Amino acid sequence: MTDVQSTNEPGVLPVTDDEWIALVDELCLRYRNWGRWGADDQRGTLNFITPEVLRYAATMIKAGRVVSCGLPFDSNGPQSGGFGGRTNPVHSMLQDGGDIALGAQDHLAILRYTDDAVAMPLQCATQWDALAHIFYRGQMYNGHGLEHVTSTGATVNGIEKIADGVVGRGILLDIPRHRGVDWLEPGDAIDDVELSACAEAQAVEVRSGDIVLVRTGQIAQVRSAGSWGQYDGGPAPGLGHRAAHWLAAHEIAAMATDTWGTEVLPNDTPGVFQPLHLIMLVNAGLTIGEIFDLEGLSVACQEEGRYEFFFTAPPLPITGAVGSPINPLAIF
Image (tube, rainbow, N blue to C red; front, side, top):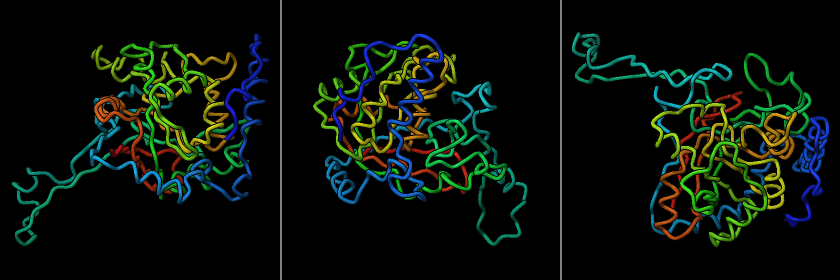
């Protein structure tokens, strides 16, 4: 791993939109991993989770305590339909108790059953972005073009390519607890220096192949308010563009937050929307997760006295999908 401080951009920040765009372009190229694991690679930084890394992760299981980091998939979710038509899940019953009572299954001997279905955008609640989700100047991870995502799905970098993991050592960086507040406010940015300081304060040694969960407390904030408000796409706390230095230097395998889009909104790069998605997902090949519920995990880490755990959150192997709902589990 490289030294974080040596990777920082110069102290004088850009001023114009064009200068910000140029900076993001430079960071995209600086941290690009295209070809690092071969021209046919579709896993990106998950390659950092080697057998040795996974064996070490297994030593995190000591107490046998399991904490889910997933939101319920139901009509009370965060989506308003305003961004890309994303709505909350619609759950319907195909066979229920009424069908049984009315004799719809009387052709069966003794056994009766219930069945159901769900219709939902794959990124409506707790989810991973596939490497086919975002494009930078017409290309996704490893240099593949727009023609590889059609009306039938992604032919490369689909979510099914990582169906055998995301699994390894997880660490929680609890930024509100580090700052001594209940939650971060919309527009609060988290940079590389703060990520390092939080890890040090929590006595966490960051290792290559780690899966990093960053808590902003936004889930706690909306619960306190009793409303999702502008959670889906509105002003939010989150990672600033400088977080890329820390993520790349530490060879992080995957990263997730408790916000709708991971990044601070409004973004801290005028002229560029969601710069970390361009730098880290498209160019570095970092799997990014969003809308994680980290409130229970925050409590568990405090009670267990450690911010490291075994973590597993495999996506559903939906062929050609550019995202997947998940139920992430932290195991102490």
